[in-house]
Image 1 (cartoon, rainbow, N blue to C red):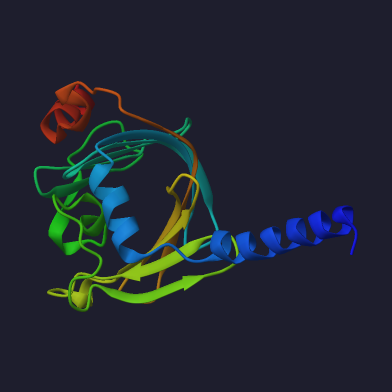
Image 2 (tube, rainbow, N blue to C red):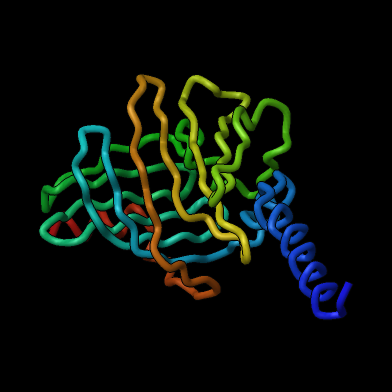
Length: 201
């Protein structure tokens, strides 16, 4: 066997062994570590609702416990998660938001102070589709509130999409664009009372 042929076979074998390693799904430990290390983030998003409607906007995250969805004009809608609550401001210029306990929504899994996807009954699905590791999770203490299905890419680990699956069979998809991390936010960005007062003016 010539030296050139030997080198060619070695190169093919090295590729053959490398591809399965790249294609393996990310472990729950890796994904928990990624979420726990994600302190602040900003990303454009596309929201696809259960009725097929599409909206766009900007997402801000400050873990633990804070998230802000700003919808692009002409929408005036805004969703804020802070102080263990989720407030939904609709398209009206004025009016109080609908408010729900954060712990009663699947978003609490992403925003928890300590994410542990390996905790008992937290993950009900863990698969790989050839591009993304897909994890379907629920609050094991409150499985009736619905589930969140998260899609992660590797190299580096990034959360690209999630789907909220509610208790009534509805689903809302959030697809993220390029995500920036490591920024600082003013406190008012996630303050529900500040937003309420602003909309009453």
